[in-house]
Image 1 (cartoon, protein in one colour):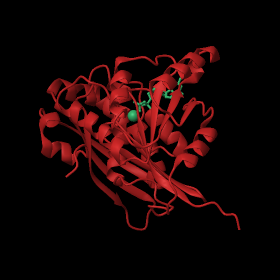
Image 2 (cartoon, protein in one colour):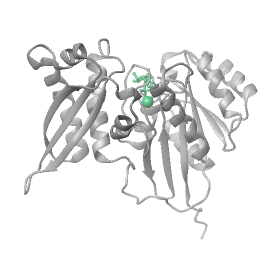
Image 3 (cartoon, rainbow, N blue to C red):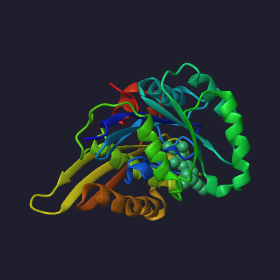
Image 4 (cartoon, rainbow, N blue to C red):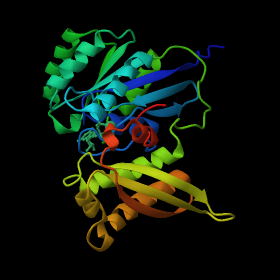
Length: 300
Ligand code: GDP
Ligand code: MG
C-alpha cells in the first residue's frame, strides 16, 4: 500500500477589501457560501466553508477585508480577519494583479510578520492584466516575505484553480477530517439566508444605503408535507430615509430584492420558498453589541 496520509486543516483567506476573497472561496467550494459584491467590506465576519475530498478536508476561513480606517464596527470586522491569521494552518494572502501595491497591503504585510503558519500568495484577477505584468509582482513579493507558493489565478474565470487546490492540499498538515464530509459550513442556515438577502440589497441599493444595512432572519419553517419553506426576514437600516429607499415606490425595491434573493434561498434549502421581508429602522445597530450579536457579527 502506498496510500497517502489524509490531510486536513484551516486555510485563512485574507487580503484587502475587494480583491476576490469570497469569490475564490465559493469557487473552491463549488457552492455559494459567502456573498460577493463589487463594493468593499461586503463580508462582515469570518465565514467558514468546508471542502471534503477523498484524501483531504480543506476548511476555508473567508474574512472581511483588512484595512486601517473606520469606526467601531469596521474595527470589529478587521479584528475578525486578523484573528483567523492565528487560527489557520495555512494562509492564503490574495492581492490583485492590477493593483498589487496598496497601502492596505503594506499593513497586511506587517501583520503577517508575526504569523507562524506557511503563507501562500495568490495573485487574483489575472484576466484583467497582460501576462507580462505578473513577473515583476512575483519578484517583488518574493523579496518581501517568505512564501511557500505564488499562484496567479482568476477566481471568476476559474483559471488555475485546480492547481491552487492541489498546492493547498500539499501544504496542509496531515490529520483526520475535522467535520462530517457532507457539512458545508458552520454558519447557521438562518445566517446564510440573511447574507443572501443582504447581498441583493448591496447590489440594488448600494449607492443610497452603503453600510447601513443588516438583515435578520426570524423564521425558516417548512410547511408540513410540502416542498415549501416560509422564510421571514427583516432588513434593518439606520434612518427613515433609508427605509424609504429600501421599500421603494409602491414597494418596488423591496419586491425586487425579494425576487432576486428567493431563487438563491431555494437553491440553498432545496425547496420552494415563500419569502416575506420587512424593513425597520434601528439607528444604532453598528454600535450596539446586542444587535451585532443578533446579526451574527459578534461572537457571544
Ligand atoms: P472580497 O471583498 O475580497 O471578498 O471580494 P469579492 O469576492 O466580494 O469580489 C469583489 C469583486 O471582484 C466582485 O465584483 C467580483 O466579481 C470581482 N472579482 C473577483 N475575482 C475576480 C477575478 O478573478 N477577475 C475579475 N475580473 N473580477 C473578480
Ligand atoms: Mg468578501
